Image 1 (cartoon, rainbow, N blue to C red):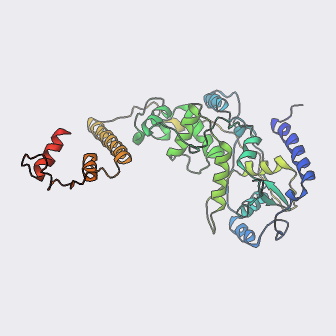
Image 2 (image 1 turned 60 degrees about the vertical axis):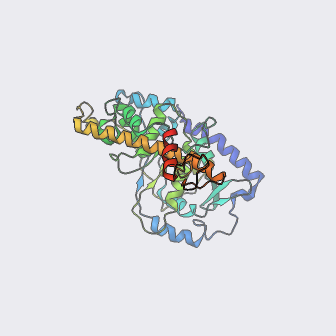
Image 3 (image 1 turned 90 degrees about the horizontal axis):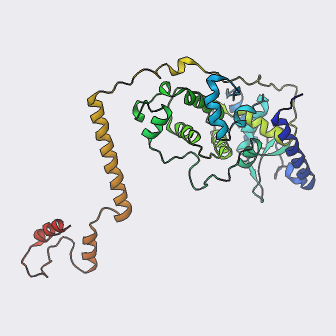
Length: 360
């Protein structure tokens, strides 16, 4: 009988959490008295009223060994993200709603442990436990850089995602992605960077695909944590779908059993990713760019280069003051040159200014 890798990981982690709970029982309880078994505060009850009934962006499973998905599978394996598309389980909808409602009351212990109240117990919710659940190593991730970051330009990203067919970002659409990148984009829209706009081209998401394709390390746990917190911070009525419901419920079950009530409703089994040939309908269609379009693009490149040079000058010289003028002012000479007659050549201010330009 085959045992799920997720179950093999859950058991030792649960044992560790149980041992910690026995050693420090206070970690299972909130710092302040809870409003009831489901909500830490009265405000959480109010938030739950807004959250209940909102739809989810459910995560999916990537089947292995499928020819149309194999290119994406290889990239995901190399990026050490395969568990994020394989270890996906059904979730308790009511528990996920309660989690989101209580998340604004996140408690941070003196040790730095971050916990959320769920059905009478405190559960850790942090980037580290998310990465641990999916066995993601972030030792080589540079914490000084943004979570999604690449030195590549938009045009370079466009060229990679399209397999070299589209060299400018402004002409890129998801329909012009390569087959592997189409699947990576689709996977990201459900499991990594959730959105309901599957065909909308967003540069941050495209940068993430660029990072994965180039084997750049990615702090998945921190990204999920920040994204979930940002959703929970939205107060009041909203139609925004709730992201990562499968992951959230798994994080809770990863630590200990979560009580199930008779009124709870579970999601169905996660769907599987599948390749849709219609999604790359423009892949083999030549991109028509007229000479006039090329000229406009070249001018845009020149303008962009000049703006970068201007920014570099600003970093070096401030507000583009002439450095020679600064030296002159330090020597007690007026910057406009109207009193500069020390050379005895009879030049007026304008003459000095013209000469200095010529010399420079």
